[in-house]
Amino acid sequence: MAYTILIGEYAYSSWSMRGWMMLDAFGIPARTRYIPMYSEDFTAFQVEYAPARQVATLLIDEESGPQAVWDSLAIAETLHEAHPEAGIWPADPIIRRAARSMAAEMHSSFRALRNRPNMNLRARYEGFRANDDELADVTRAETLWEWALEASGGPYLCGDFSAVDAMYAPLVTRLVTYGFEIGPVAKRYVDAIYAHPSFRRWHACADAQARVIKQYHLPLPDGDITALPRLPTLTARHFEGDAGDAINTTCPYSGEAIAADSLAWIDGTVVGFCNPFCCAKSIADPEAWPKLMALLKEPSAA
Ligand SMILES: N[C@@H](CCC(=O)N[C@@H](CS)C(=O)NCC(=O)O)C(=O)O
Figure 1 (tube, helix red, strand yellow):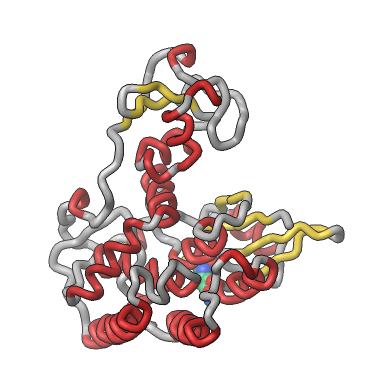
Figure 2 (cartoon, rainbow, N blue to C red):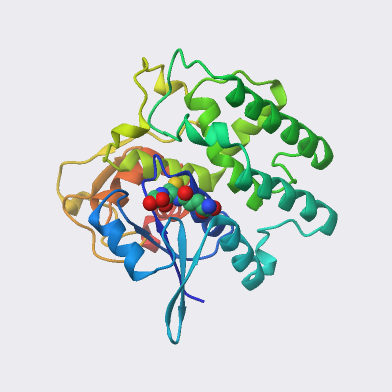
């Protein structure tokens, strides 16, 4: 099956993150197509794939043309049906029921937390004052997480990372962005999500994307953005020199020729990419990208 996942802004679109992780976290290859939210392109997407109208939307290549599957739970179930071995839902039927219940609750509830404290991977605010409904949602999330982690032993809600964790990952980031106070079990779960390779890749893409949408930002003082619970990674920066200095001639991701404006210095080595976005996401967190790490380890294989 050939898949394309249509997503909105990496920094702000929580449902895009969920749909994208349903593929990426389970090693299911897919093309990612970014559609800027609140743009003419977004309206064109809604017309082209109607009645789908929100992101994430999964496109499945069929002989008759691409078929759209929209809504995060429909995406999870469709992919699970096509790839039952991928671990999208836990293998054990009893644990799977718990995972589906918690995922469905994320989808239908937590309205207070989903409304005002938007997902915003660019910010870490000081002085956010949560209202009672938001605090009740945090308490409910902690109750579910403590129950599931106690039963499964962690590190993810049902043991290994599954669709239920993709559903809660954006909520995890809200706890961090807005500085909600949480207990030790929830803190460990927050750290586990921030350490997950697929979450790291998504976050690196958010770092690489420049567009700021003002309505997702609150007029609050910024806290220390470097104090996010992200794992340390290799030092990297943009490289202004010559493409001939790179250890590779083709992009580790696409296999296409590297571009002169897409060079990175990563821990002492110059690497080229096929476009500036691939370069920027690699600089943001080199260790999140297995193909890049393989290239750095064995340049001769490039
Ligand atoms: N129930 C949907 C929610 C999808 C959703 O709300 N997506 C937002 C982006 S985070 C969207 O497309 N917003 C643009 C719009 O509604 O026009 C799901 O589970 O995926």
